[in-house]
Image (cartoon, rainbow, N blue to C red; front, side, top):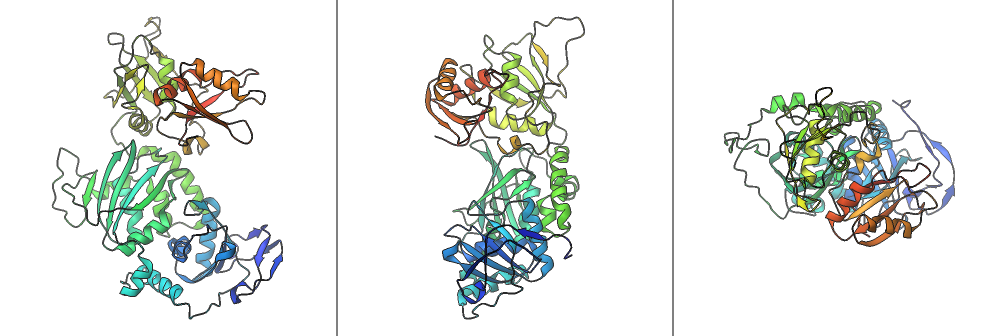
Length: 501
């Protein structure tokens, strides 16, 4: 396995003799061969030992740690060289984060760490971690060292949810860190969220440290994890929204399908993703390939039996066009066809490229204001949107966009997958020509019928943020100005931003 990979350390500072406390630095550029000791750099100031240890947890036993507080660095010793190689390979494809800050991991020149065994706090943390990893229950003093939070319940938010994340997927991921007892899923502020209860607060702490900020699928579905103020969840029904694993006898309730876990497991795309990786079933080199493959294949899971067609109602029939619906719904998926209903022109059918995109567009756009009216978006019973028969004029109410060059998500792994946000007053602009000024853009967006509250260019001036006074104005501006020709055949790209100015 030594031949798997060697990492070239082009980074300047390698600490010589750091493990025995020497501060002498040498500037070197050299190839460090694989070692079970890993050198971690650019840690945030407030990072704790437990958080550094959590980086190594999914890959095997962590046997020692040395943090260099003043230098924002640490050395982490894994139980085996294989574990260290697996870890380095994984983190070359997925950037590791501590407290939402990207950190850098490379092999150290040290073959082992010789640290002061008298450092009781470090030893306590390591003992607690190994107790959790071997399935034991740590002693109370060790438990205190590890469990900064006393709640066994985690609150989980999924960002960039381009593909559905099911209750079973969450159970598979989190059960790696301990016994998952209960899960409740719900949608709040247009975001999929879950409450998940472990049998022990220490397990919740470990899961939070290891998984916060990780992507479930390639480039999307990012886990944001906090401790809940609740210490116990009350689950009434076992179905696809909530589950109490300690009480299998609970009813499904409210006509919700009761999920057979074996069916859920076999159709889960997850065998290619984070869960499979955490279980050690993948060899490290195929992990990235599997994650990439999953992003393409995962559309088969999720909304089994539902179509990719949406019914949109309460539209402003004087104003709405197939093109305006194509542009707005195109923020959340690749729109294939749009049909405004001939006998009911305040309603339309929109065919997305798959059921997951339809679900995403529905969760973000239902209840938003378009042309002054609050629109309703639901899943349609139709499987496809029919085109008018040849020679039949339907007054341009039906449009086929299957071959549109404006689809945002055609390219697998495109950056657009990572930038899917709910409608907001702030818009992200890109592909801005070099000679276009702030005043030009302010004027353009004011003419779209709104008030520009703030504007900010990015450093390279090819991108900018522009803030309208309301979400409705931003939606209108996006519909009018996405793909606007700025001259020289450069077309402006507009999307919703998560930032404010």
